Image (tube, rainbow, N blue to C red; front, side, top):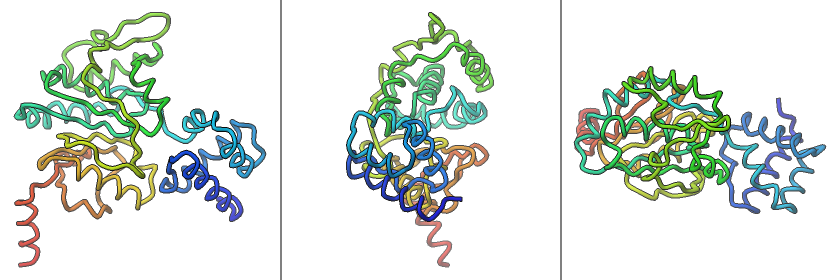
Length: 286
């Protein structure tokens, strides 16, 4: 349990980061951000959070590593294969009806989710008509995502996940192994825009058919979760799809009524067209 004095230190430190570097972590889950700040305190050899705050204010060179300490970058390709199978079998048939597609991978971290979607879209014949937007708060993570290089010992899990997602080919078709690493085919990211974007403070930047933001909202408090879902709602076309992580939902969101469950068990939602939403409202009022 966080002590009152530590809560004050955390608040001051987060405000220092926000004002000094324009990175807003104030809406992150209290317990989660407290753990990450304590980890950062130890990493930078500071005896207190107040000392870390002083370092943040006076040493801009620590910012890249500080962001690495405060953001979640652990993922895997085709994580939760049943989710990707649901995309392949139930969402893709609808996406194929559009002449062009835009997909927003929000909180892409080091790119595992992006490459999973790019591979799936290639296998389903959608790659040439799709633009991906891969965004994250952490510029170092974005550089790693753009490089598309992963440790070779992670590939067996990636490969098994890919197989379970319903693919008919081997994941090895998409990468070259060399010097203990797997380098993924650069054509997979040829139609990807990598950009910094902060769900806590930035606005909508494109109209998209699919938003995939998996296992990000669980680190936000209720207010920031609601803001993020509002951004997703405003960016999606009517009938567009929103995909969340297995422990996330729209149950408590003020924007939840504008979505309907599409594949409920995989937390895939569809933005409800206005005419359907109006019928819901009229039915409720009758």
